Image (cartoon, rainbow, N blue to C red; front, side, top):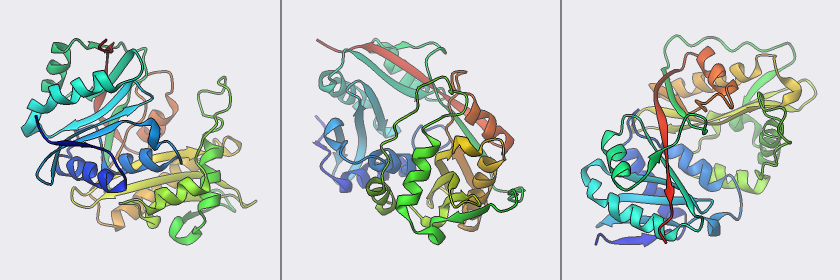
Length: 304
């Protein structure tokens, strides 16, 4: 059996990110930035997440991260796909809910075959799934804002409390899902400080649009992987009071220009691909992002 250890703190997130960065390509599902965001956007969730890392010496070969007791995020070095059975045997016994799910991208043919061989079935397109979209950083449009609005980065703003409030306001009433009850985002100033302290966060790549009344009307955070030259948008949002003013496009363009200035060659983002939440997909299309892959969600019952 390959040596492993269970997650014990931020140093293990960096170890997980080391694998994610080492094997990144447009056909892999994770970026170092979304690992940091999802780990730190809320305070106090660590005990909910069973997470395990597999090693050879100091090199991470695979990791698994169980969300909500039933959904597995995982990565395995393509040169060590023999670890698939170890990762999934752990998941299927460590999960606490009976209905298990995971996802891979459509280009990951060998993982698709291994999931089928282990009894996972493909979930239909009526289930939420994500796309992988990208664009290069040439020929960016200028940032255009309504009179009285201005774009700022967190290098200028330096206020995690206002930044966290901007996120909560944007995610309390979601475009295209107005019939849903208001959301209850758990992002707080404390959790946003965690995000800002995480690698590879850069305040100059975290952007907001400030309205004339001082409210932060739109926001977009970008995470830059210098090794691969790629920046990830995660998260992006607009306060419902300021929709249809072009602010989401403007804040994303401000972040794209900053990303290009930082030396990136590519930007990526993962909007929903199903028709249950089409607004982000439409926004990124107007910004020049095109799809290069999609998630294939799989499900099975937990082992007894």
